[in-house]
Length: 281
Image 1 (cartoon, rainbow, N blue to C red):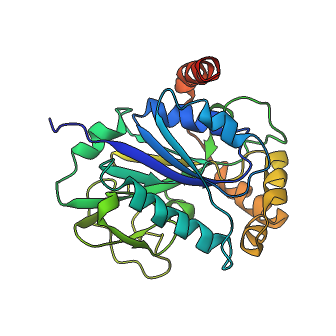
Image 2: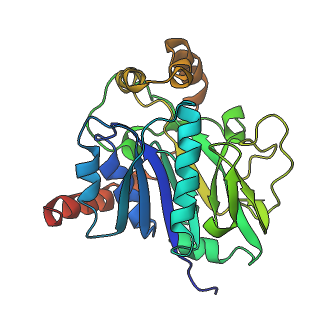
Image 3: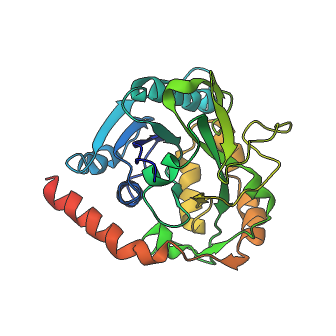
């Protein structure tokens, strides 16, 4: 068996106080050892809540204001900076959002799974499964990974979108918030096949792979939470994505099948959150 590799996560956030603790606890339990988080002008206590985990994991928060070129460019610049800072510190970095959860299909630590990819693999594209509102109109305060268990079918068009886990020293740049340009090595799907050529969008693959890694994307949450997400949008790019019609249209098609595979992790997530709150004080 190959030796376990080290794994980091890079993300940008704004006003995610209700979600940051679950998200950090979940990924620590998946074996992530280092986080670099870019604070995009938060006005709540997301940073303070995140910092409470510093005794359990290497965590760095960087203030990251909007670029003059808008939110999309701001995120790409943050990812580039994160790749530069993490090069030499971890073997792989997952570039994801706060509503995305990456894990191994067989629940092993991510580092064990990534170690089994061939040595020439420099980036892994992990196709997403998107989750709907499950007919919830408002937040109950429970974990996102427990509340939302209705998802799109495996062949849904949203599944062509992926996020990337890559060797940071192999990244030249990000050609989208989903994908990278490499200076060497192979870009593969989560099942080990080479990522096929992409024509419509650099962050989409023509194949929806179900391999060793999974990505759950809680794209909507409840209607109330979706509305609050709209209020945080300071950029036209985000406002266009969060229109009411988008919620209705998307929710109609992605509450199709039950996927509750993360629900059994709830007790461990809550325990990690409790420890961070207690020991981080």
